[in-house]
Length: 361
Ligand code: PMP
Image 1 (cartoon, rainbow, N blue to C red):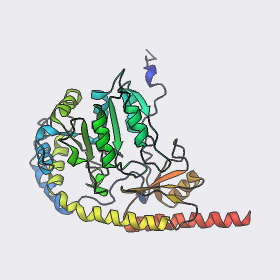
Image 2 (cartoon, rainbow, N blue to C red; image 1 turned 90 degrees about the vertical axis):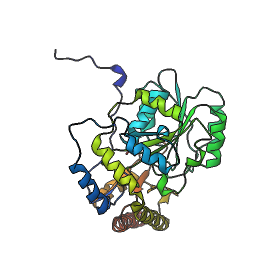
Image 3 (cartoon, helix red, strand yellow; image 1 turned 30 degrees about the horizontal axis):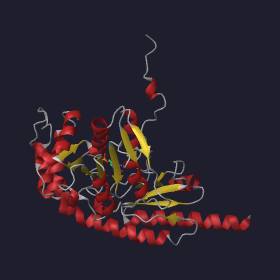
Image 4 (cartoon, rainbow, N blue to C red; image 1 turned 180 degrees about the vertical axis):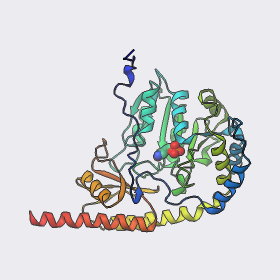
């Protein structure tokens, strides 16, 4: 055959593209700018020497589940480990979505949610965020009151806009619906806020976290979910049996046991975010949105042109300028002090040149 029967459902699907290009300053993917501490790296190397590569891994990563459960005052049955938060997000759509099911989204937010809904035939009900990118609390509660929503994802802090969702609102929402409410805390460590205290009070709450950001392990692919044991059981029905490989489990356990070693880097990133925010506010033509995450969303005229100018100077940031509700926006990941300085200097230069050019018009 020189032809193949394609699935027409996928005809318009565009594969996820993080637009990862080589650059001196990688400030586009919300990764930690710091690699894992040397002590942890040494410990991992030691353990790797003893690993039975010929054996399948523990399908449920129970050692890591136990560590995470103990740290959160929960049981193993309340924890699910996944191949990155992304796997857990896909499994959410598989387990709680599907044809005839509805997912409530709050755009603009992480695009993977709607992509997963589409792939699983789940209908997306969008309640767009308000002008300052806070969630439309009343809009969500009103829509949920219709009683037909199956799952909701609230990203706190939100990617790519940076805002937290208020705990009071989340509590209110959990009481108003039996839909699964996922609070995606992928960036939670940079905010010092968590919905963890609400677990145990609400069966329909799950919390997603990742090793990719504060724990410097984006390259390893590890995420986890906290929730009611009955809810976690639903995830066990749809997940791939060996999605978390033995090397990742080993690394995950070592990193998690030593997680206090990441505190200084998290503090540095939070402090740098504050400094960046202050400086961004002094640059004419740039609006910076307050952020509780390790990135800052900015809006400026001709943001796509600015993106290219930054890239030409070796600085990669994320261009959202052609994304609905994020027109003319760039997302700047907080990097090392040196990287942030280079980024701010480049943005100031762009603003200066624009002012000069306008003066010449
Ligand atoms: N949730 C949000 C809001 C994210 O931004 C990301 C990563 N970009 C994830 C979940 C998934 O992260 P990972 O698969 O790396 O754990």
